[in-house]
Length: 306
Image (tube, rainbow, N blue to C red):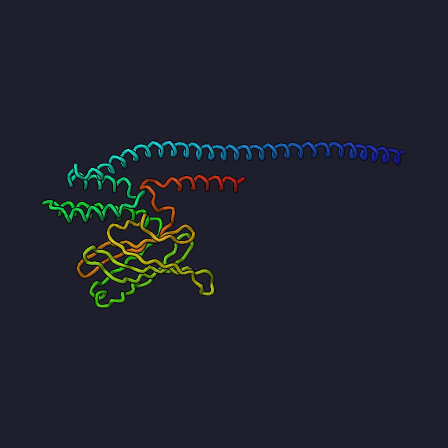
């Protein structure tokens, strides 16, 4: 009797465990389903948010590009009208005064110095002023040289900010005593992870035109074994050589330019500036490509976060 009761009790316990096991399995499946559903929802929400951020960034780039395109188009029309008007004034040399010519040179230079090579025009005006019988030709020459100096200063501010430079002093008495020319101290500059070695050799000086004839040599390491790629150029540099236009093209879309800063009776000062090619011959405004590149980098960061 007692044994039968114990047997019945264990049978009831076994039945409860069996039914409890099924309930536990059902609860476990329900919990896993709930967790999985929430995980999928969270992942879907994150992907949706990422897509929305990317679409917003792409829309910003598109809108920015369209605005800049329209702005450039409007400015091009305005600048074309300005340019045509000033060029016509130069061709009507017999009907306008020297003062008006110099004024038009100033306007043309300040507005277009990053777009066109103005050196021939500056040389022409300097010769014309020197050959004239104008009482104020000294004043006109000062104005021409002042605008040239200001253009160089503005361009150098931009190029120095984007690149690297070094300055050198030249003793003209020493140069005169060495007809073969004199070397200046070499220097090494690095931009955009590209290192180049620069050397300037001054061959001669023209006291009348205040120009220097130089030979520039650029050595770029090609490997770790000491091999170099050599570029060289020989040219005259004066106050009317503006670095954004008058420069030496290098590989990897880079440039370098030698700028004449001062030319006195016994000495001269030059600067070599090494800069990315994207800064050559551009207008003096915010560089739109930098903004676009920044937006593209933002897109890349969003993609990495996905």
